[in-house]
Length: 246
Length: 265
Image 1 (cartoon, helix red, strand yellow):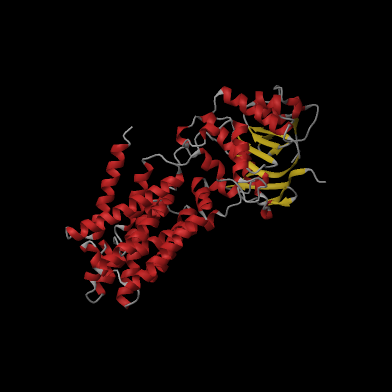
Image 2 (tube, rainbow over the protein chains, first blue to last red):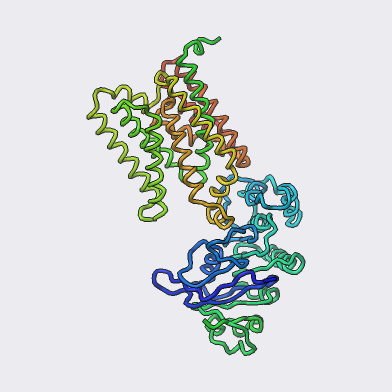
């Protein structure tokens, strides 16, 4: 059985003539807990958008669950939580229940009620089900969006800077949930973050991206130029960082 | 039976108006949450071109209006997507272009300006049985589309990017929403007029938003307000000899004012 969830090969992408990725290759296996770090503008979010099919690659291959991204149809296998969840949809006139249920797929083996009960219980948002998004705090909104992403029991969760705008207590809860999702539910996790402290405690792999370079493991990571340029060389992350020569 | 219902033209007005009032704010609410409520006004102006053209050639106004407004609304949406012009500018260009074209058609026409006036501000006298044969099926189609594809429209309106990641074909549902707006405008143009149909789509929806309900209940409430305003407006129009379109819109404004007063906090 193939355990590769995401396989990126020789990816090339340029924006306004400037190369973001020139020849990027990496894989994410089932059960991985991957943190993606890098300086601002290094292409982290662009990479996620390419993987999610929101923008189109120029060359190379992106395979999700063994299928090329262009023909990928099993969207329920992916749960995505965007950047700035604390501000998305806050003025949209909908309740928590409506927003979470809106992502329910007819391919789900659970009924809508069962799926809602499961995610509401998991995130303790049952009491908020009738609340409007406008009445929620940043932390509550974050839980709503994660619940929404989990309604179809995805196999991978993809987060883009998930803790921005969320208070410390909710951040801790959030990382506890991620750990649980990864270890107990076997959900593969890929997330972009600047939160080095949490990522160093949690992630099993860290990809460092800087100026389109993305590298493979080694024990001499502290000396790697990419880590120095991104300021991570002396962080607790260093022994978890993967480097892939492009 | 009340005197007002003894006249067939009023019966037709209530029938057509009720169908239009039920669906107009449903589409209107989806446009509002997408920050695209100006589209209703632009489509109504484009529909007037369709009406003027059909009167010029002696054709049925509603089908011509549907076809023309759909084509133009599609072009507007593509222009907006292309980012070659700002979204609001695309709407303004088509609004003014339509008005310019209508004025030219009127000036070259052979005295149909009186009839066109009913299309501008609505006149219950112009609603014929033939018109009902277009209005009722079109409104039922829109209502069915909203009921059947409610979740798709909701997801695309909530966040197009999240919708795309979930595998929803955002472009298709955007176009369907625009098509529905065109159908509503073309259906309502006889009841409240081309210049005022946008009001029946937008004001009841904004009024219902003041009550801070779920999205689904906001939809129901907006239809309720629209139907109430339509009925009250037609009564006022009949008994005080006022234009139907203007009366309906002013009742809508009154409801909006009341909704603000009731939900002051």
